[in-house]
Image (cartoon, rainbow, N blue to C red; front, top):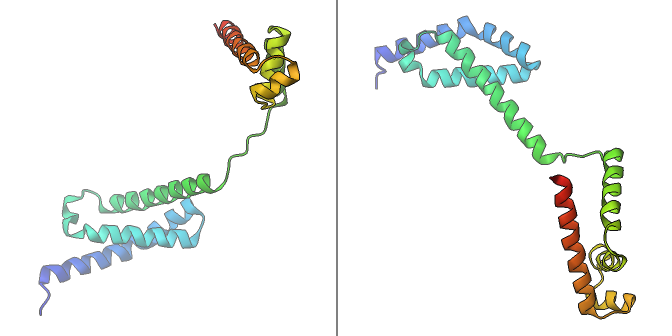
Length: 167
């Protein structure tokens, strides 16, 4: 089976193009990546993608510019994928701000001090310390329904006070 002459000419033209542009592309990619291996991989990928479109090369105004664009897009895609992989693997550690924490504690304390002592005690036992209303009732020496009522009143008062502060 004989290969058509135009196909052989296309291969020859591509070989010449690779010979002319390989070193320039490699140097540019080495400058961008800082790695010989990455520059070579990106060069090869770019030439392979250009080869896939080589039959329509006459429609491209600047084949060299197109080659460089392919290579730089490949670099950006690799960098983006690497950054995504790092974000997935490396947990973000937030360093607590002592001033923010102190301010928050002062705000919470202020809000709690605005409650009645019984509401404050019910909220702290049920919501903060995790006691059931029956256990909290035994501690406070009241019925469990009273603890639920006091905690509900306290939550409502906190929401109202917090809403007034934000307004």
